[in-house]
Length: 248
Image (tube, rainbow, N blue to C red; front, side, top):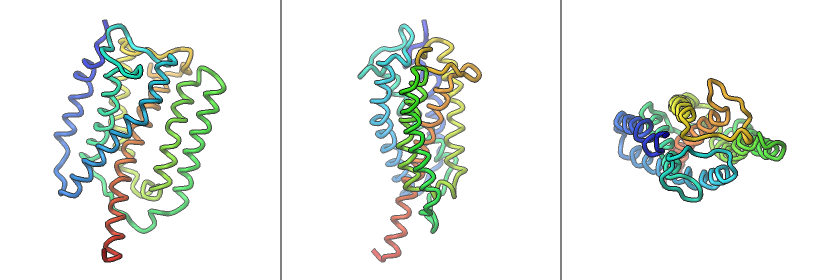
């Protein structure tokens, strides 16, 4: 019998989350307050934005779970899956704060070119994803994923594309490193039958045995979370500087 979903978290995700929380350095009071608030907001967004999409994918049959893996569910989503929403958001967030980043606003951060490029890319992801969903059943997971990611990419880059281009190291690293670990444990879980992806609704492309859809899901979720966190603090710093300049 496969490992229960909650047992999977106890073995693979919660220890890493606790380690990163322990390693996170102590920031000044303002950064601590803003970081904590940013994490709370991003976790709430992850639950709100992912639940309808995930529920649709599960009820459609894009993926299912092995016997004995699910102990409880809501809207067809297992409790362990909901836990994953929060754990991934916090894991990439704690990694980001462990490694550190500079949220300072600088003149030029509102440059139009990167912001427009990001909006165009997000719109292309959304439109292309919907087109894929309508073309073939094998593109449902991949196309649905791209359509789900597109609006977030467009919004984030419309706000802070200039800053993201100017300070790429922190958000790229914090998106990639935890994601590599999540790829490894996801591959293990699929191999052990904890969750099973439908052959009908996936492309069948699976580098190293990990479906391309899963690769892109974990990567995109990590990127959206990390860029959301850095932009949250960057916007607050921009507002601080604006208030100082206006004397308020």
